[in-house]
Amino acid sequence: MNINATLIAQLIVFLILVWFTMKYVWPPIAKVLDERAAKIAESLAAAERSKNDFEQAEKKVAELLADGRNQVADMVANAEKRAAKIVEDAKSQASTEAARITAQAKADAEQEMNRAREALREQVAVLAVKGAESILRSEVDVSKHAALLSTLKQEL
Image 1 (cartoon, rainbow, N blue to C red):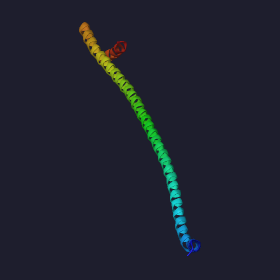
Image 2: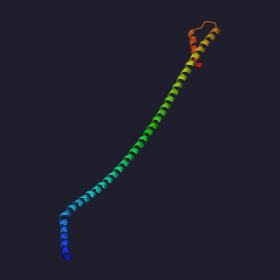
Image 3: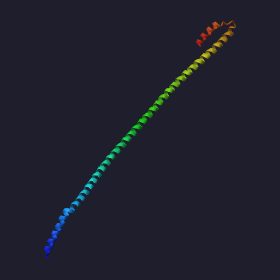
């Protein structure tokens, strides 16, 4: 056998092997590789979508937190305003009540002074009558002297 015939036979067998491999073995391997590449690409796309969804969720959470903080700040400000208003109302009510009590006390004092003056006039009138009676030592006309005493009361 010649090296050339062996080499040609080996070349024919190799070409048949290459043809058989290209026809029956390579397409399923290429198909599996393509499917795997598609799954990897799909997984990468899903990971990218998940990353975008996560970033959007983080943004939404940040917005919700900011809104919550703003609402809490507004509620605190409203509560402070309400408390200040309540304090102011209480102060105005207290000053109104103090003015009313002071006016009532002044009115009561004025009434007591008037009663005391009236009682003092009565006592002065009685004393004046007794003094006049003792000076005159004569008959006293009650109706005439009553008119005199009322005039005396008015003057006092």
